[in-house]
Image (tube, rainbow, N blue to C red; front, side):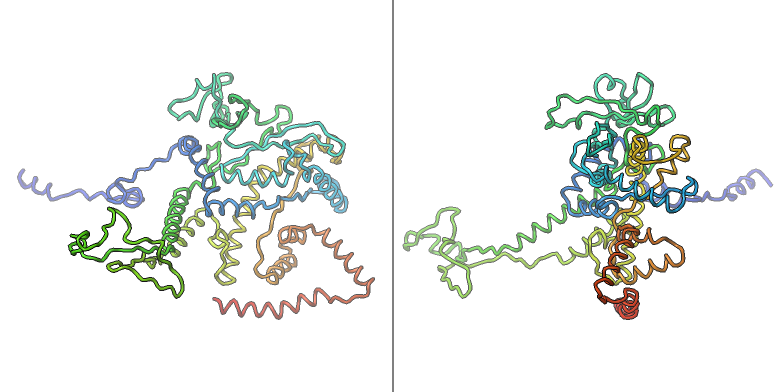
Length: 545
């Protein structure tokens, strides 16, 4: 084979075409027209979150205050997750602590009464405006709007009616910020001023949160007023460094209520951040449609001149005794004519009446708005029916929406209880043990024992009940098969205490017997309802479906 033939053979032998693998020909493709100009970047949490936090916080606050849908998202989550406040239910492992079941119940009930002395009074608030349950509502709503909220532990002298020194001070989240002044010289200009160096210890300060070289939070920088606030008259803004934890006890000095979504995140993201653009556009669209509807509702009447412009009256008005109108003047005097039932008006010759067409209403407005609202609800993980308070579907669909919403609100409730309620309860219990108002043997001997004494559950508002018979039946079956307890069911379904319910029921039954009344057997009545209403409900549900 000569050289020419070898060259031809090599030209015919082609290397196999390289094919993309994995996402290279999909979402990571750079050849497709739809993706070629799409070049987002995921950077650090400081670049993605902290650099944009002020803008996100301001816009989220505006939507939560000034738009119905944004306000509904904040109010709905706050109402169902916290409501009137989470209630304390101590749950101590009494066997580990060497107590009997009866002794444990006595201790738990006494502790709840003692805690209520502190939590039910406005004295627990440093500003003396809200009790502990009101503070929960404020802290949770602020956490949703601003991304995080803060509570500072303070101490005041006890009084005769209030024997505790513990006070809670809620802080505006934008008061935790990077300090200006001498420390500002150590800011990183490339990070938009969100990060600076503390020259005294070499720690980094990120949006008011000071972290050491290991990334651990060691302190918070709190200003005496919101930076840039022109109304506050406290003079120039000053910052104070507050250590995150006490050096001796290791207990927190300040609480940050926040749920992180990034591994190296130090400040929270507003709840409405993913839907801010949609909420703004929905607001503009609603305002535009509302303005158009208002304009269409007006009955506007115009008098027009129908005479030809080249008529003899227009050309030579004076010669024929006609009076020429002023330039730009009305054709007729509108005050001389009225609109009303059975009203007859005689118009001058050559004058006609025109009205504004008000029939061009937007027929697709409702369906389009429903689609936008559903996308916002899905992004916030709240069912559309719950967010809009609109239950127009069948019982099964409405109940499914409520159950999904309940999962979301219970999750956020656990986060909030772990960040706010439980740490405050532990601080209160520490003082109660020190002052001798609550007895906890071995509390200071072992951290495991101390943790056991402070174990507690926090129950909040219950979800709406569409069919009480079915819900109570399901609750009874869960108790029967050991899937839950009566106490938990009472707390979650009605927010009440089981022992108080039983004691009240015993008193009522005894009173009925003493008075010789016959109000019926509750169990028989419940069984009758199950047979009648339960079966009818199933039929109705099938019919709706």
